[in-house]
Amino acid sequence: MPSLNNATRSFIPISLGNHFYSKSVLRFVKEQVIDQSHDSKVVICDYLRCLNYQMRGVAAGKGLCMKVELEADQFRRTLNNAGISNSDCTIVTMTRILKTPGFKEILVKLSDYASSIDVEPTLKQLACDYLYRFNIATNDVKLVDLQKLYLIYEAALCIHITESLGYTTEVYRIEDMVFTRYLYTHHERFLCSIVAKRSLERQFLSIETMIDEWDRGQKQASQFKTEFPS
Image (cartoon, rainbow, N blue to C red; front, side):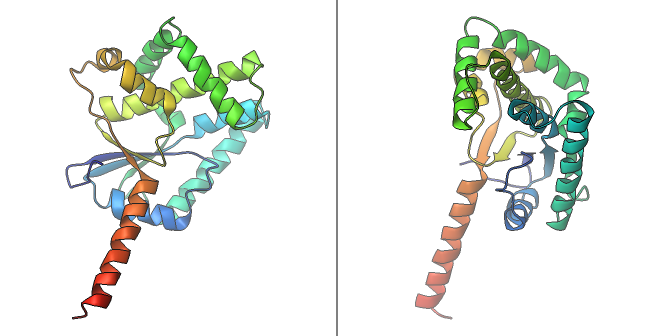
């Protein structure tokens, strides 16, 4: 697992509606990731939340935008309450990133590539797997297309932040971005071409794994103090 140091630039995507990010987990992220890194970018993935709501038929139109905007504002306050603010990292919404030329360029190229005969069947299967996992109908073409769009935008965000902007250490829950992982595993040459690099630099850290390792370290230290008191 890659280590964090004062040269690390960390990318921390946050999924809205994910109950994993409790106050204690966010404090761990601040102390063990943000404070240990040279620079960090926290991205609140509001646009992906919009797509998720559309797939679930929760809301639409202006009502949907207002609902997600409220959730993003609430989560920003949650971050602040955990000690994470713009004073020690950059906090930005995905919606804002969507408007940048660099992201748009990667999205267009990735979308075209994802529709190719070499990639589209895998993308469709991954989309159907996701829908099935969350008990959403996989025989609805519109829902499958929305999930495919979700995976493409998720991957484009990752590629843009890690490879183009240089926040090369991605810190997320488990590596659940299966389409992103598929691209990095099987289509490295294409990814290098769209970011104009000879080699890719993204590294992945699982928050769950980091917490487990930290807990084990704390228990071992406590046991050592018990067996060998000073």
